[in-house]
Structures are given as structure tokens and as C-alpha cells.
Image 1 (cartoon, rainbow, N blue to C red):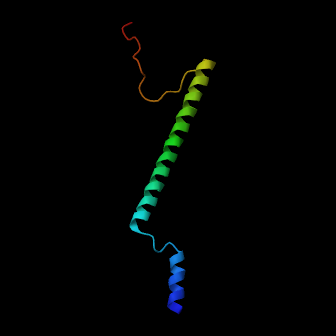
Image 2: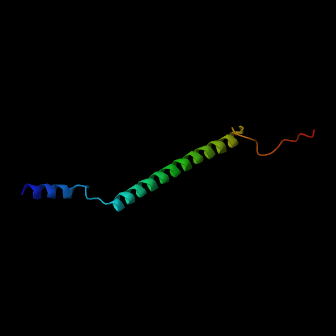
Image 3: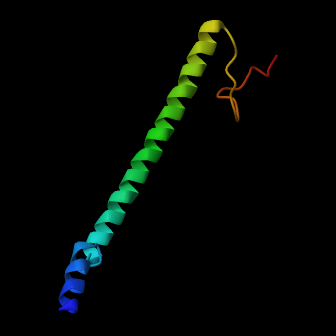
Length: 76
């Protein structure tokens, strides 16, 4: 009888979880991480754009990184 009780106790846990269930849960977790990362990038981009817009309204120069978009007139 003790074996029957132990068997019933183990059925209540996640021990009987199959490979398909674990793979599905892992896929859902990866998708959630991907969405969270994309949302963070969108927030970062929005903050940067707002800062640039405020700087333009105030007449300040944008703090750009990298090469300029257009060359200056070097023929003069």
C-alpha cells in the first residue's frame, strides 16, 4: 500500500512532464525574451528620437556618432 501512496504523490508533480511540454515551454520563454528585448530597443529608440527633436527645437546641434551624412563643400 505504501507504493500506491507514493505513486499518487508523484502524479501530482511535474515529474510526468514530457519532452514536448518542455520544448513548448522553452519556445514560449524564448519568444517572451525576444519580445521583451524588442520592446526595450523600441523604448531606447523613442527616447533618442525625442531627445533629438527637443535639441532641434532648442536650436542645439544633434550629438551624432559616426560619419556625417553629407560632405561639406571642400572646393572653396
